[in-house]
View 1 (cartoon, rainbow, N blue to C red):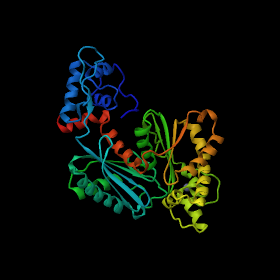
View 2 (cartoon, rainbow, N blue to C red):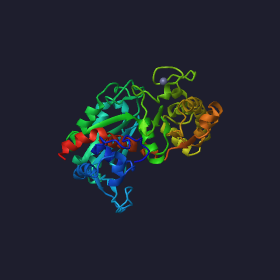
View 3 (cartoon, rainbow, N blue to C red):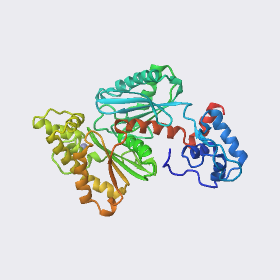
Length: 406
Ligand SMILES: [Zn+2]
């Protein structure tokens, strides 16, 4: 829970219960004295607001025992976010495969399932099936559906975060403009009998970036993740928040023209994804007689050290690295993470070759090019965190405390 930008300025006399919760959750102020100091509120007012958070079950006294108070006097009891009062559901859809989990509010996975789920079967079927998975996972985790506070979903397409709908997704036929939130909420209710909960939807690369940045690189203020699987997409996290652009299109680098002849799934010719994605490498392998139909087939071949797959992955890495030179020059990130089916040594070697050759030395002087730490769980953890950050954001806390009657 670190690395987020300050939303509560020191000396703000208007700090709400939500602001105090935010200060505790981020670790910036974890005692009553520190909260007084950070907000300028009186001891009594801090006490009243904390009382509401305690009554809601959102805060508890820390296990670490008392610490020295910044205001002097007796050592103070530390406060911490009580993550046991609710749970979150999350799912990450790939084109032919999905992963779903029950998570704690602080991102610990309590139960997890992965299996075949084909995006091309359409949202009605896929989201209905996810509802069934969620019900089974809750049973497995030993939790009640009534404990669920929200659902986060990662999808392989561009998402309008205001509506939670995908916008002209090249690899999600039948999903354009579909009410994903409504359907998933209904599926959850149908399969569990519990009341509807908040559903948040975002692009998979965005949520992978969010999950990885928060858990592994919390101090990195400009973080870029590139996912290279069936398609190619990037997620950008700036100052701890996902950067989406004006309509959710930020990071959609797979359809930048790189001047090749190949036909892309988006209908255009010469997109980066048409020549350097896992799908594109699989096609090249199949043409030369190597059985491969998807990015995950390529991943398996790379894992077994297949020389032709390695050579093609390195070439794909060079193509992507050329585009990333521009990305890095524009954003000057501290970490560039390569994730997805192709993320391995040959691809990374190719990326580095072109990146360092084409980008300004100043843009790459403090750049770490790394691979994923969370692997296939990155999207799940990002989706869970998105829900928690949304529901416990200072501007939403007042209304939620009101609904709880505290
Ligand atoms: Zn394209």
